[in-house]
Structure formats: C-alpha cells, structure tokens
Length: 150
Image 1 (cartoon, rainbow, N blue to C red):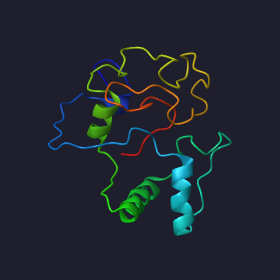
Image 2 (cartoon, one colour):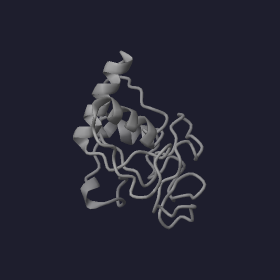
Image 3 (cartoon, rainbow, N blue to C red):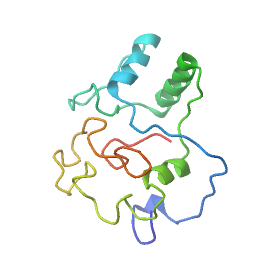
Image 4 (cartoon, rainbow, N blue to C red):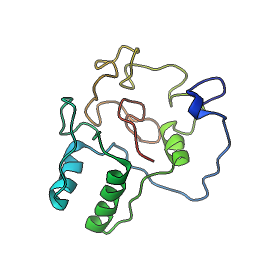
C-alpha cells in the first residue's frame, strides 16, 4: 500500500522489479469456468455462499485448488498458465499507478464493488465478471470483494 495507507501486513512499502514481461487475464476466473475444471477432475464445486455462481468471480477456492486449476488449464489448452506473483498482481491491478486504485485515491461505485462507496452490492456480494469498465490496460474489476490468489 502507498505510505500511510493500507493494512499493517502491506507495510513497509518496497520497490519490486518485475524482470520479465507477463500476461494476465482481463477478467477474473468465473464459477462457470472453474466448475468445468471440477467436472473434468471429479472435484466438488466451490460454495457460492448464496451470492450466485455462473459468471461471478469464483470464490471459496483454496490456494492449492487455484494452483491445480491453472495446471489443469495449461494441460487442456497447451498454453502455460500460472498464478501471478504478488508484485505482478499489484502492478496489473493498479494499472501502473501508485495510488490505492487505478483511477485514484478513493473508491468509486462506478468502477468497483466496494464497501462504503455506494456500489450496488456494497462489497457484500460480487458483481458479474465484466460488469465494470476496464482500466487503461484492459483489466476488469481489479478492486472488488473477490480476493485473488497470487
């Protein structure tokens, strides 16, 4: 987090170098996408906590399950997928800025699903993937209630 902001576990601020170019999905992985993996591997689907599955970002997935999903996706597609590093995620989510959000300092209901910013869901439930406009780098909804695994 920028100096003086964020949670204690986000300090101290440090400079990180990302040595190689990387690509990251423009959208979060959805329940529907993750459930295809569950069907193919015989695993039970994750609980949607009554938020509604489908095209909402998948949640209630362990780090081990997330790693297994990207390994399965790599085998299925022949492309190489992995979870981003924390530095890669922060860089992508912030759109190259140093502010708390890619658009600036304060949460905005028109750009994210967040508690206390007046969004339709109030940070209590997820919006459908693709609901919010992308930031300048093309990433959709990097600020919201579904936390990514890195």
